[in-house]
Length: 60
Image (cartoon, rainbow, N blue to C red):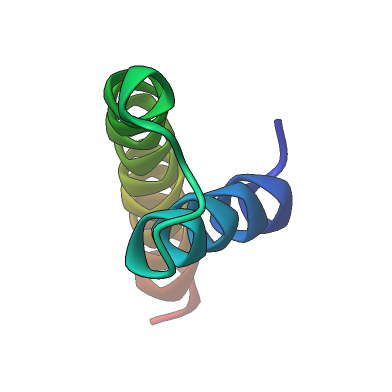
Protein backbone atom coordinates (compact mmCIF):
# COMPACT_ATOMS: atom_id res chain seq x y z
CA UNK A 1 0.00 0.00 0.00
CA UNK A 2 1.32 3.42 -0.87
CA UNK A 3 1.99 5.97 1.86
CA UNK A 4 -0.82 8.25 0.71
CA UNK A 5 -3.32 5.38 0.68
CA UNK A 6 -2.31 4.31 4.18
CA UNK A 7 -2.61 7.86 5.46
CA UNK A 8 -6.05 8.24 3.92
CA UNK A 9 -7.20 4.97 5.52
CA UNK A 10 -5.85 6.13 8.89
CA UNK A 11 -7.83 9.34 8.55
CA UNK A 12 -10.95 7.32 7.79
CA UNK A 13 -10.44 5.18 10.89
CA UNK A 14 -9.84 8.19 13.14
CA UNK A 15 -12.88 9.96 11.72
CA UNK A 16 -15.04 6.88 12.27
CA UNK A 17 -13.94 6.64 15.89
CA UNK A 18 -14.30 10.35 16.61
CA UNK A 19 -17.77 10.49 15.09
CA UNK A 20 -18.89 7.26 16.79
CA UNK A 21 -19.58 5.67 13.41
CA UNK A 22 -17.96 2.36 14.34
CA UNK A 23 -19.79 -0.20 16.41
CA UNK A 24 -18.04 -1.78 19.36
CA UNK A 25 -17.12 -4.92 17.41
CA UNK A 26 -15.46 -2.92 14.66
CA UNK A 27 -13.42 -0.61 16.90
CA UNK A 28 -10.97 -3.33 17.94
CA UNK A 29 -10.39 -4.40 14.35
CA UNK A 30 -9.98 -0.80 13.26
CA UNK A 31 -7.43 -0.09 15.97
CA UNK A 32 -5.38 -3.13 14.95
CA UNK A 33 -5.51 -1.99 11.33
CA UNK A 34 -4.51 1.54 12.37
CA UNK A 35 -1.53 0.21 14.32
CA UNK A 36 -0.32 -1.71 11.25
CA UNK A 37 -0.84 1.32 9.01
CA UNK A 38 1.09 3.56 11.40
CA UNK A 39 3.98 1.10 11.46
CA UNK A 40 3.97 0.91 7.66
CA UNK A 41 3.96 4.71 7.33
CA UNK A 42 6.71 5.09 9.92
CA UNK A 43 8.85 2.51 8.12
CA UNK A 44 8.37 4.24 4.77
CA UNK A 45 9.22 7.63 6.24
CA UNK A 46 12.35 6.23 7.88
CA UNK A 47 13.45 4.54 4.67
CA UNK A 48 12.87 7.71 2.65
CA UNK A 49 14.75 9.78 5.21
CA UNK A 50 17.73 7.41 5.01
CA UNK A 51 17.70 7.55 1.20
CA UNK A 52 17.63 11.35 1.25
CA UNK A 53 20.55 11.47 3.70
CA UNK A 54 22.60 9.18 1.46
CA UNK A 55 21.87 11.31 -1.58
CA UNK A 56 22.83 14.50 0.22
CA UNK A 57 26.05 12.93 1.55
CA UNK A 58 27.19 11.95 -1.92
CA UNK A 59 26.66 15.49 -3.17
CA UNK A 60 29.10 16.98 -0.65
